[in-house]
Image 1 (tube, rainbow, N blue to C red):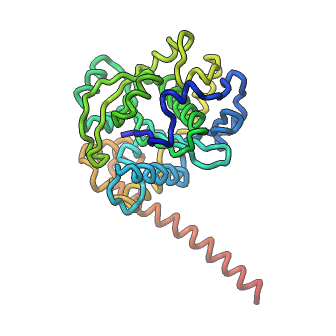
Image 2: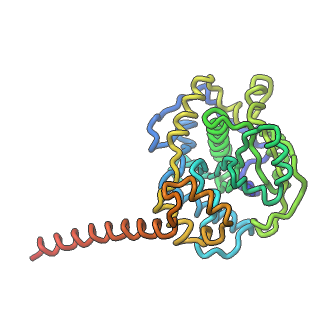
Image 3: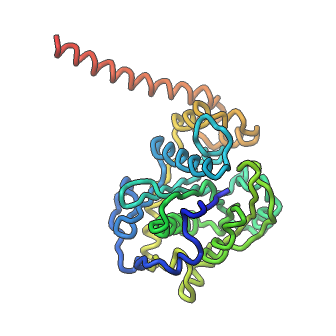
Length: 325
């Protein structure tokens, strides 16, 4: 479920009222992947969470927002993620404001043999897209607590990058997203989504209501010259420039290391233990460990890293003692 935060995010009318200057007057300032992609003269910087520290920030950030909305249970980890975050193509995007504070986050999950998160509720609806040969990505774990005056920039940057990565770099055909029905008007009115799944209660978010929406990714490109479409109306780049941004985004995407996997799925949560046999089998098949026990290898790697840092600290302490002697 990917809700927008009421009273803190944009409303459908606020998109039309914004005075944000179209990015045709801007330039993409930074090609440095570590610095992210810079929009609106620093008003929004988008980067992929591609290392432990950034993933931790993203999972904590979304958990805090979802907890405020009553969507979470009492997880001791204070992290919001799922077994789908372990897939190598899963991408979490973070957007920072001009002060370097996280302003929003979302995660994109590509379809795979273990399916998509929304298959839990809407498998028949998603299967109808699959039966047409469509390549599908699902947007999950979306949240923002940015003040209204800055939310347009944050949302524009996040959705524009998600769109370019999926459509241009990964050659996906469709987005699906499960949202609270009170946000349906925004998604359908401004982002061109349409409802394809009925109202249901979603156990993943404490039984909150959800509807399934779909966006064919070719649609915004076809219509962007004819009507105002958020966020493309703010980003009037040439196809060549969009391809360039998409390539940079793709370069930012890195699969989890074994240490990251151990940290998030074994040490801090019970997600690996709770995963289905099919999910475990597939993740082992596509990982470097192959038939080895992922639990044992991840634990050993984590211990090795911990020991390395401990040895470094011991060495520093010994040097300090010698200098003081």
